[in-house]
Length: 49
Image 1 (tube, rainbow, N blue to C red):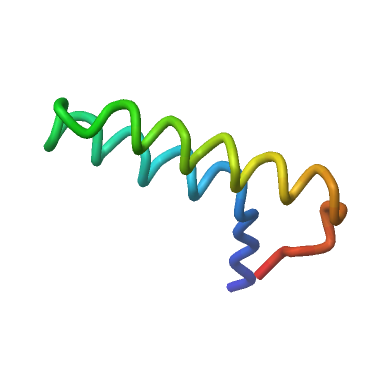
Image 2: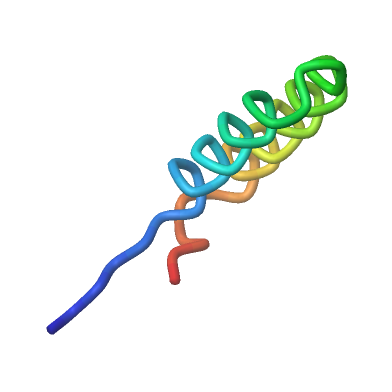
C-alpha cells in the first residue's frame, strides 16, 4: 500500500481541529496556517511526504 500525504491539506486538517478545540486561538491558528501555506507557495510543492 502506497500512502501519499501532501503538507497543505494536512496543515489545514490540523488547523481545523485546533479551531474546534480552542476557538479563542482562532487568530493565531489562522495566522500560522497562512504562513505555512505561503511558505509552501514560495518554495514549491515538492515538500511531499
